[in-house]
Image 1 (cartoon, rainbow, N blue to C red):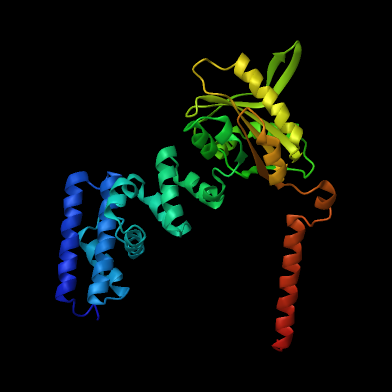
Image 2: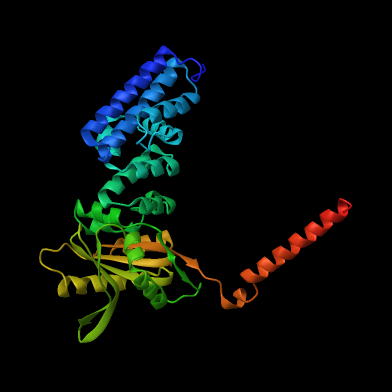
Length: 354
């Protein structure tokens, strides 16, 4: 079928119907309200899907629709062939109109496009959509969370929450922790010490809090506690607004060791006695290590009374100075590239007899 030479009656009917839908949406919301815009786009995509199946139309119908709709609504920028294809993809990815109303339409169109581009699993796509609404993610933050595979990491820390916390506190606590944590905004040497890592996290506190997740409020670092006449210091102290509890985080530059759990148990007891408000929930510990053995962690937590989770963290390691000195600089690489280009040009002239 050639849309450009002789539009069929069915095509004309579709075009007229889509024009009517657009005009009605303009009247209701001026296309400024995201919900109306996304619902309109979904309905257009749904009609394209249905008509392609019913009429046997190919992909060219989208180009024809884009051209004709643009002529009728020249002020609208969202009727390009590319955008119409996204509308079709949106309808194909979210066939349930109720879910579209309750979930998809609550997310800006740009967010929906990124979900279509980056997330192929329907289950994951819905999870990221729900998290976007719950946490108010911007488009860039959504992309960052997808690229860091947050779906696979969320709630994966090994913990004793089921035995140490009542329901539903235990489930909520489990969901706020992840494993591993992605600290790729830090660039440190492979043998970086704990204080270096902690200092780096504080220097990038905004990214650190973003990686921790929604609800974390920073209280302080190296927070002093006096117990039995001696001074102790907490690496990092947070308060979680949803859990209504303090979260003590300890950073360990090496592999998890069982004694870390005992020390954290001590810290949590002290925080509960010295800092916790009567209305607060029990304080929670988070031990962050470069690596861990799952069995060792489970044994270490088995008889611990205070709630805590153990997770790994990942860093982007910088090159050591000794290796940096052996690598060519940008200027050296450009000079080498220019020299090779000139040599290739000379060789080509000789082979062509010039």
